[in-house]
Image (cartoon, rainbow, N blue to C red; front, top):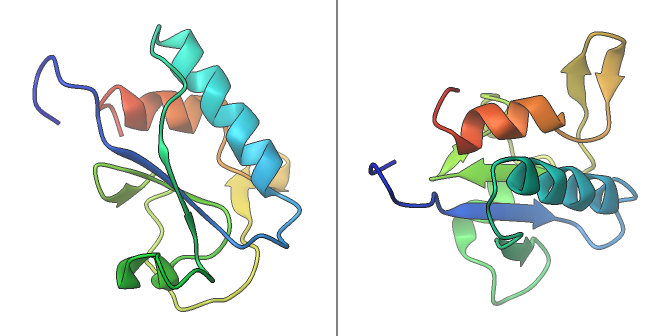
Length: 106
């Protein structure tokens, strides 16, 4: 990320994944915490308008400057994904993981 430039943020999802709204909420919270506008690009993996690269990620995935905030390798999984957490697994990236990625600490 270039100094002074907001990162490119993308949310990749399947419309039937029940975890997407949680990811949106956490992304909004992370951006707000950093004093940034809640703005990102959303890609529906099933849409013909979505770029080919989004199909390699499960739902929901948040990319910051092209990097998965969970640092997980891409897979062609057409499914909801889970994220490791202190409690075992979570349905979306944590607010802290998003803040770290958005501020270039990840």
